[in-house]
Image (cartoon, rainbow, N blue to C red; front, side):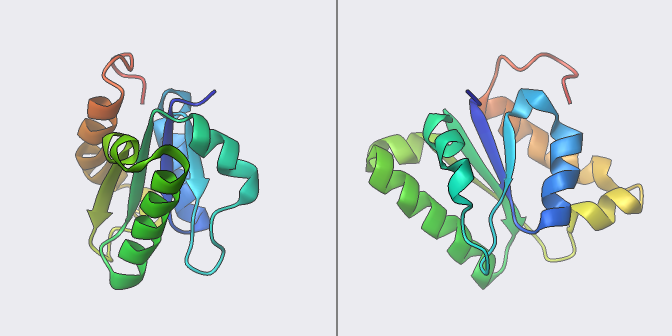
Length: 128
């Protein structure tokens, strides 16, 4: 029943974002060039009202985001996918887990939160 799916590339990033965004952001899931989209998470992707891909702004990461968009468009139709799909691309140094371990994740989350809020405006204040 998740309404928002946030996709992060790389397992440490996945767990870090899951802890930081909490249940109000819905499901935070792993998607990687090598591993692909886990089949077990397809129902969450199908049910989500919004999908946010938080990944690096590199050629391979953009490919992952584009393929996920195309998969969503194939399942829902192009216009519905355009309304539901958002990209949050960041520089290669913005490893979520490394930022968290260094105590510097808040500045990066401050850039992601407006996108989450825009996709789910009724998220309670201070929910994450």
